[in-house]
Length: 223
Image (cartoon, rainbow, N blue to C red; front, side, top):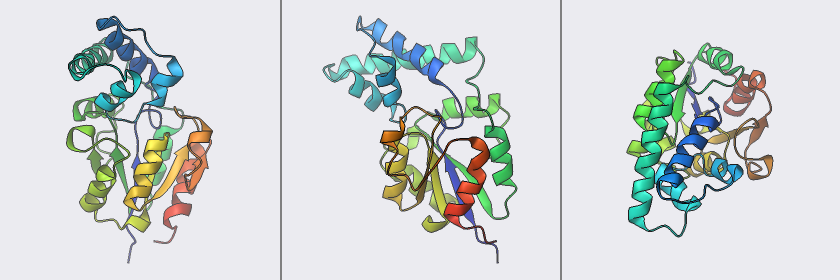
């Protein structure tokens, strides 16, 4: 009997390097309200949260109506950048790692991202990955990370047991979300949170080439 497993991926900072688009959209959101843009490392530090929470963290003194305007300005600018420029690039080795995992018997691939469904669909289509994922969980349908809702929904949709699933991401929010849902956690070192914020992960990989083996080590190699 084949044991079903699930490799659940974050997107920004894990599969794609979207920091240029994120920084540009965040700059537009703050400029629209005449506010100074926080330092780049602070902007990257909130990647993974839903957009309203991310902006609230970066502008904690802004009233709700101002944050609402900033959210809309961010979304409009991000869309404009996505249309006017090339899609955020995949990290080196991402495509090959996904293909390797997809070739493992019983392995399902999934997404759990703070992106909107429109944003996720656009990036997957741009890279020819639309058919790769059995489950796609997005911010439109769930509370922000690190709430476990996205992971729990992915488990329910795929029918995979928690001990056969791993959450793969680059932020502490991904790791906390995975732990809260009772799955294993695998941190990638090439993303947006520094190593000292990823210490609670079950494992860390430095290169995409090492990721398939790390996933199998965490969720069991047996078929």
